[in-house]
Image (cartoon, rainbow, N blue to C red; front, side):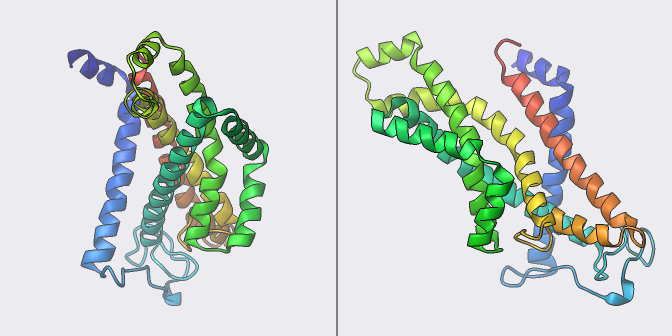
Amino acid sequence: MKVKSLKIKENGELLIGGLICSIFLLWSLGWYFYSTFINGSIQSPFVPKMNMKYELVLPLQENFLLGTDVYGRSLFEVISSGVSYSILISLTVSFFASVIGLIIGYFSISGNNSIKRLFDFLTNFVFILPSLLLAILLMSFSGQSLFGLILVLVLTGWPSYAKLARGETKRIMGLCYLEGAKSMGASRLRIMLKVIFPEILPVFVVNIILGLSGVIISEATLGFLGLGGSEYSWGVLLSMGKDVLLEGPHIVIISSLVLGLLIIGLNFFGDGLRDFLDPKS
């Protein structure tokens, strides 16, 4: 325990990234609690209200901490909604993409020849396609909705996890103690659940955290192109801000700073966690 505590104290990236991610997580949970239970309800949660009287108010004016947007909505409230939305989307997409990738990657090594060839072909086919163009194509069919956005990001995100799971499974399958478990009569299901998946899990957790920032950027890109699933998408907010860059530069500046800080925090935390879990360190 002392060694682990020392490793955490010496790992600046883990501490800084963890602090930033904790702030954003508490911000998201606090806004959800406020909009659902204090100033709204589960059936009708609070949303930032439009008031054209306060259009493009600068920060710290008219009692608005971060100013307002082109619709007169409090920019702090809009960004708070965007933080909750981004975290929800990124966690949901990363979870489903990692589960699909883990299953496909595992059976790409341990399945029969037909399954191996099929899963290898699917993984490589989706992986080599430009993910942004594929996402735009899929969004044109699924429509502009939250479900469609999640579906598109999952379908374009699982191949990287599948390749990771395939490589780790291949490495673990060659270990001596796994051969010993097979010789003792352990079933394939038991080996998968008790040996292979627990061995893969630490690497997967690190890559999921690092992948969260990629999901957020991809979602923001689609929102910027008008294919987002919510009006509180970072991309929608930046697209709105670029149209009034001279009249209200605070929209783009503040939104970019908050988004950049979230991405930096996730990358710091992922890199620090990878070093912390690395047995060689």
